[in-house]
Image (cartoon, rainbow, N blue to C red):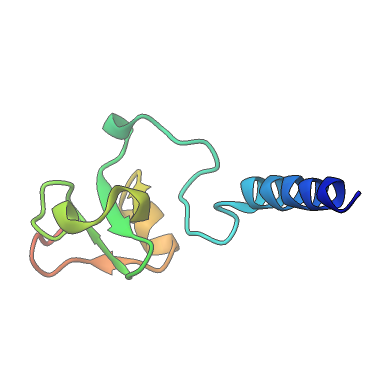
Length: 88
């Protein structure tokens, strides 16, 4: 009986974490666009956006990347341009 309760609890926790993953992270759209549709990239841990070819953009771990369609998209989410690659 205890094992069954633990198994149910683990299933509930797994489902909850699967459903809430990404709810607190910054995302530009609910459905990911094709990467070619994005112009800029940022990190969920900073407030800078970059050209994808920027040396600093290359250092962002894939799981921490947030993609923006355009300057307005990045700015609307509180991001500012990188001073190294100078996006618009």
